[in-house]
Image 1 (cartoon, rainbow, N blue to C red):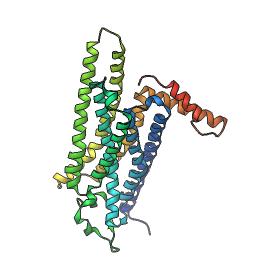
Image 2: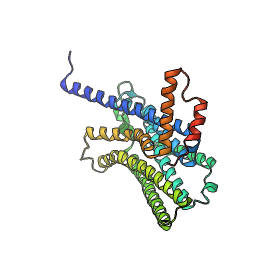
Image 3: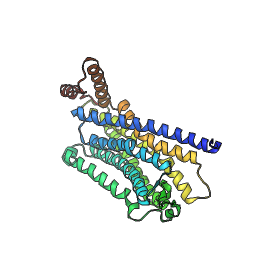
Image 4: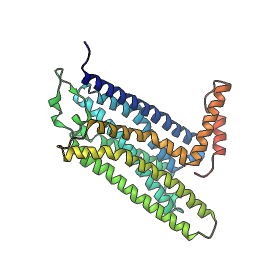
Length: 332
């Protein structure tokens, strides 16, 4: 007995969606694993800023390895226990929140670096940077698990199947009240606004310092030129985050404030895909915009190709790591 055209069309749409999500997941995991590897190999990149970049890369790896598979499972509407579905949905929120808090930490770090350059190394130490990374993840965990404490969709139990389970959908268990007021306005709009202000101030301070030294060539000029290039790259990462995530949140707001204007499912799926694509974009920004990162990445790739052709040894080997560290000390 053949399926109806409507069912076949839905199955085709599901397959296309799953295929795209799988490609994004692979790109996110591979690209961000390379980010972590580059920072581990090149000692010149092991500063406080790259501590936060590694934290962001770990969050993006989790998007590819956990969030996207969970999003696929949830999109299929499988039958699960209510709190199992709620926990899976909360994990999506935790990892998303860790990304935006890592971006905020990067912005604060760069602001302190140009605002108090002489005292920066005393105030922002490697140990304090890792403590800040841990705080970002703890805060992400607490804010993302708020629905587990009661702020969820209590009407979802009306969706129970004959076995007593629930048809698991994100919007079925997560309250739009929580998503709009707490998650979006409190933990997306507010951090993004702070980041815009911080990067605006960073560029203002750098431009002012460069103008003051326009006629002289000195270490301070090189310092602020380097900071300007890196700030532009990191500001681009923030811009891409906003570009990829705001459409989905805006559609949630439309569904919440204007329920009579139902957003098409195609638009919602597009918004979800855009939010996931963001995790695959960051490594490309680093590779194209940060010279030290790009040089190290190219050398790792060449070493991998070389050792694969000669002998099946691990890549990169300890000796190779040393050479990479010594050679990759150029400006970003």
